[in-house]
Image (tube, rainbow, N blue to C red; front, side, top):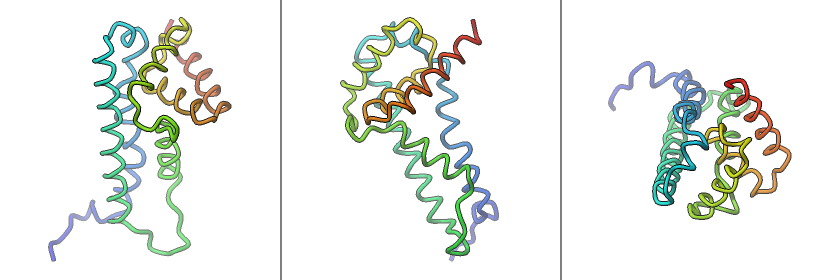
Length: 156
């Protein structure tokens, strides 16, 4: 049996994936806002969405494999809070109703950015807000919308 590196065999790897897994790709895209989105043509928007969701699918596969490789030592142990938070936040970017209907998501993002107050909101957060609303989680989507608008006003 091949020896594993000490880092890969510790639960620390799972926590790092939980902390860095979602924040990395999303934070790297915070500079892509509605101002950029509204200048793109429909095909570029669709390609962006396809890449965005392909990244989430790949990230999810890596995360599931990390969980299999690092099972909890005792049945009563819980995942670290960061891992639980990661799982919840990941679900907020995928709609049970919209699935991977990139045309519909693109149209909804276009409508979202018709409001001038939303133009400085990053595209990943716009997607998250739209997905939550589409799935009927209005209260959470409104909370995120207000939070993102507040964040965008700090930069003015």
